Length: 376
Image (cartoon, rainbow, N blue to C red; front, side):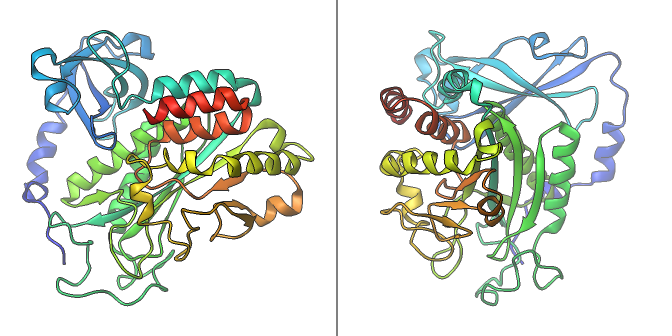
């Protein structure tokens, strides 16, 4: 069995003794933000003298950007601007988790703050009531980096019995998955469901449907909760799009998309029109569907193992080997949504949703400016 962290082996009964102490009328607020890698999350906590009831009650804060790869030491203060508040499933009510945008000393967005651009795009397309649902795949690892519960010097049996599998021989780490699900529900994250994936130790949870900017907010907080739950169990969750070389499935973040027109009778026509637009911008989308300009997705989008080729755009009904999949039910009912299967597991949901909304709903000039600015 893969190794677990020493901190997870500390006496949890002793911890609970302290966690059950009353905290008076004080409230702990944990600020969460995306660091300079564009993938990692950071957090720190402060005390408020009251329980906040809205995001406007949470004051701005700051942090040392030179320690998160977001600033130089000579001018390192960065601003944390609260944007979305959740209940804290770790220290419980009345305590809060607060997702924040990061601004530089001059109040401009930090390089990995893609929420600002996403919010601008979503404001431009708000009349379309665009909904997203994102399917976050991830892989559980021991702290030694080896997939959790895989043989130390070998491999488990080939893929087949693990997808939605049941039994100790098929499902590795279900405790983490179920605790994360409960934590999301308590926090108020719009988690839709979860399942074991094709590769052993690989799982998926879905967030949505969320409208506009809410998609990115809820997925980032769901990721934070996943990493925190894993911390308590002494294991790690990786969003690497291809954590194991060879004949093992990679990890994506399939993105389901639906506008008001797509959900109405005759919506399939609008779905097909959107797919046509996406096909014309395939390379531009690939460039923003992982944090490294498509380099991570090159290892995953191979044209097999339930993926399309990174070099070609394709679509099809019920085809999991295509770039864009139209669910069979949607094809039959002639309305609903489509699934973009290209985003990598470690994508920034703000970047992905902004790119899709801009391509499908804005004119070409506006869309191209948005995509270029995201890629900078």
